[in-house]
Length: 335
Image 1: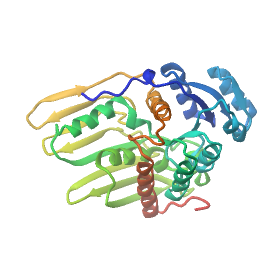
Image 2 (image 1 turned 135 degrees about the horizontal axis):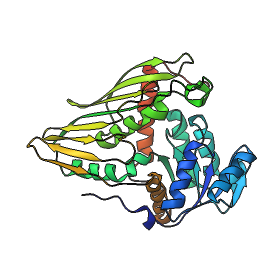
Image 3 (image 1 turned 135 degrees about the vertical axis):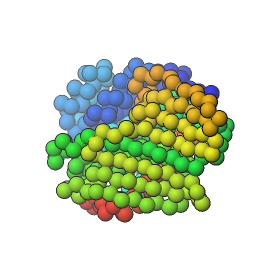
Image 4 (image 1 turned 90 degrees about the vertical axis):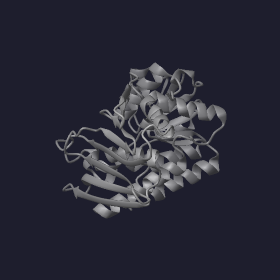
């Protein structure tokens, strides 16, 4: 069985957190509890929010601006945890200050913004990675090994969905706000899309249908990806229902059933056509520590990107997301 490396074996690294929102709390707990890294600074446009976050996690420095955070010489790498609409600006801010960056998914709003971030990282010779934490989790690492060994034969199909019951959120919430790149696709749908890219590669056909919210963002989207003559992925995302959030990879000699939530630490079962079954299960506390450890390893080695999610991988995912949005009719302000 292919094993994910223990996050505690990665070298130490000093993190700065840009944007102390909900997902930053998840990251801070993972770094504090499960890695040798440290968060040494946090930056927010609100001094009160920055200080409250710092107090909660024992972070020595709190800044009332992002500019101060990226200028801190104690910070090796910046975790960009602002809304999608700010990823482009904030990643560039950190990169131009000479900092390595881990940018929350979706990487940016669109591929044009993503390309600017990638180009800047290349020019400044700093490490950059999209924070698609799923790719580093033990069950996904092990699942890739199953596919590479051909245990289910030739892969011909992939089904994955991610839906959450967020319809009750107020109209002012970021998920419903076009100016904040709201909608199901970039927040939830990026998981099944990136999962398909990870396991099947870049599709040569994209077909999508969707339903929009009154504000004009995507509330629900169904996506079909085509690869060559017979390989397909069927993906779904919605803001209006807590769906099964499972995944199934079908092969000519069996299938892999990934339990809910497929994008979080979970289990999977290999079901072969000969009737044999086996299950992979490795309990994990949190999960963000695996991507944080990957950044630390790459930076220590002098690598400028991760082999598990290269910058070209992130650009390819953004191209698919752009095409899906084009087909369902979603444009963000300023595009």
